[in-house]
Image (cartoon, rainbow, N blue to C red; front, side, top):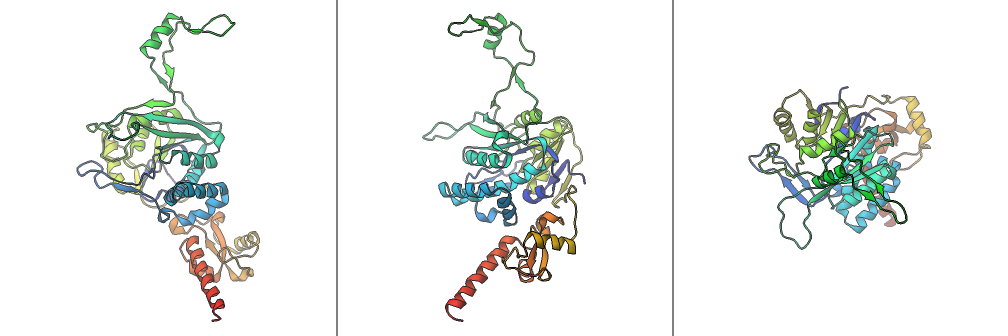
Length: 412
C-alpha cells in the first residue's frame, strides 16, 4: 500500500498505528503545548474555521492503547504519575496523550531516522523525559533554540522570544547533513589576516587561521535566528501556531535526503508537507482538522509553485509489514498457554473452551488481525466489552465487583 504524499484527516494515534514499522526517514511534530489556551484562525484568513483547544483532561487519552504503553515502558507510568503530582492532572493527561503517540512514531521511524519535537517551556522538560525513555537518552542529539523577534506584551519577566526543538535519532547511524552559515564580517577580517592565536601558559603561541575562508561558511550552531512569520507574509495562512517554511527547510535539509519520507503527525497548516515537496521529499501529513485539506491544496499550488496530486483520506491505513493471522484454534491455544488460562478481563481462570479471542485494540480504533493484538476473554467479559476498549471492560468489572461486595456485606 502506498502511504506517501498522503494527508490523513483523523486522530493521529489511529493513523500512526496503521503505518508500517521502519517506514519514514524524518518526523517533525509541533504538537499542542498544554498552554491552557483555545486557538482559532481569524475570519477571512486561509485557515478560517480551523481551531483547537490546548487544554487537557483524561477524556483526551485513548484508553485502548494504555495497556500496551505501560507493558512496554513501565517507567513512563511512574514518571507521568510523578509529573501529575508535581504539576497537575492535566499535565499527566497531556503527557500520556503524547507518550502514546511518541511510542508509535519511534516504531515507524527508520533506524537511520530522526525526530524533531517542537515545544515551548511549558512542557519541554517533561517531554524530554518522555523522549529519553522511548528513544533512549543516548540518542538525544541537540536541544535547538529557535530565536525570533516579535511584539510582546508587558510582563514582569524577560520577553519570551524562543521555542525549543528537541532532536533525537533512533540509533547512532543516523542521517545528518551539516548546515553552514555565513561568516560575520569580523570573523572574515580576523581569519583573512591569519593572526588568531591560541595561548597556553608555558607554551608557544599556536597560529589558528591559515588565512583561507571555507566557501561554505561556518557550521551552523544550535541557536537558530529565523524570523517569525510577518502578518503580511505570503506564506501566512492565519493558522494561530504556524511555523515558517525556513525553519522546516533547515530541519529537512539537515536530517533527510531527496526522495526520503517526511512525516508530520500534527501538520495543521501543512508547512512540513509543503517544505518537503519543495525539497523533493515524499511526505505524510496527519491532522484531525478537515480544514487542513483546503489549506494544503492552496499552499501546494501557491507556495510550492506547482501542484502535484496527493491522497486525502480519513480511513485508518492497514499495516502490510505484519503477518495477518485470522483467529483460529491454534491461535487460541497459544494465547491460552501465554495467559495461563486466565481471562484478561476479570482475572478468573477458565478452561480453554470457555474462552474467546478478542481484539485488544478494536478494529474500529485501528487494531488489526495480528497475533500481538489478540487476547483471551471469558464469554461474559467479551460480551461486556464488545467493540469497545479494555478500559471500558475494566470499569464495568470494577462496578460489578463493588456491587457484589455490597450484597455480601448487607447479606443480600
